[in-house]
Image 1: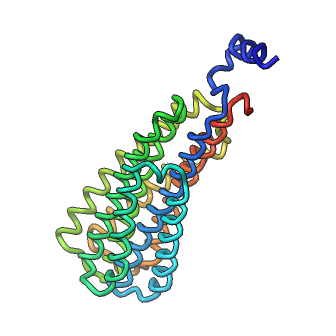
Image 2 (image 1 turned 180 degrees about the horizontal axis):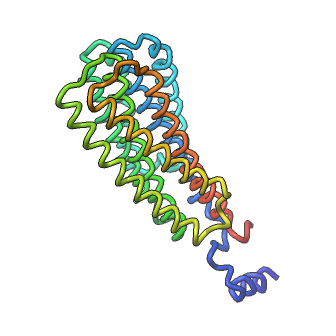
Length: 286
């Protein structure tokens, strides 16, 4: 009976979705979600630490909360099957050890040094994300590969650029001073953000168009909201923060605007993750 069902599915063109349950694809999606959580928590820790060290004392309690989130994400990653891959495991362990050391000394060194060291660790996490994307790709079908590539190589890098601008800008506003080096860095971030956001819009439009059954209409709305928010935040940064005209600006409010953008990005990330999990169920689940 099952043989006839398989033949019928193929005849009617339903082979676009895997016939059999892809447990590896579902497991990889869980790992990617925790990797995302680690990126976001580390980015927030970096930004809040920079804001605090430049005079925004209200950020201190939030720093500790995000450090706990970092630890939780690492623990979850270590509990999943993909952590048994030696390449993934070695990189993840190195990142975990480095973050523990950095968290313990972050507030006792210069703000600029701490910001740079967190940025370096986030770059290492993003490199791990690319490794996961490649190492896990053998277990993914075409849709899974496309969605994972967008999550790991467009969405997470975009959160990093927004996160860097958020953290650096919040510090500049708190200190009421901007250096030439910071101006140069912010200009580079603005260009990269524009490029990545445009790339994401194009990638997601194409993916949704050919896989509408995996996405809710809210994803398209989230992408539209994202575009509006990114443009507004970039304009605020360009006209106010870059010029040093930060009088009357609130460091925490600027930080929160960046966080809102990243939260919207996470909705798109999660829509892809859920789509991968749904796709992994297959038509048949023995």
